[in-house]
Length: 125
Image (tube, rainbow, N blue to C red; front, side, top):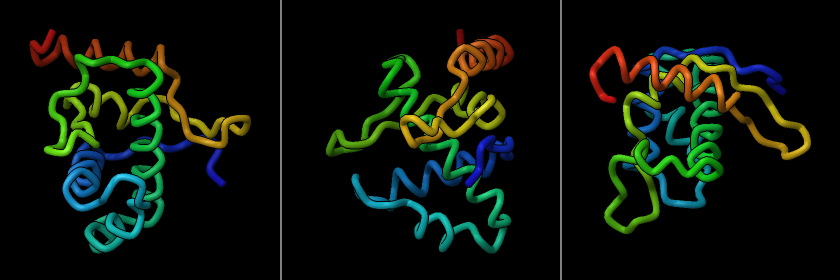
């Protein structure tokens, strides 16, 4: 079990998020779709890290409810598309396993700090 999730390349996180958004039904485990689509380009460790980071990002959007970070809902309203600024921050922010809740989480303060820094770089503020 990973206790600390290593950073991942932003292109991997973007691709994994798109695969989940486009191909995975709500409630289904996205791991098989990610492996099928990306295992020829990324290592198992990178895919695992991306999977954990996207889970933590989903948890963040539920807990923190940062609506400005959600830029598009799926047609049926069941999935959110995350703003690229937050995605870039999620690729590198500290992400750890919370044993009490049995899920991966970000250090939310660090995630927001990185997202705001990324927003300043591309004028998204």
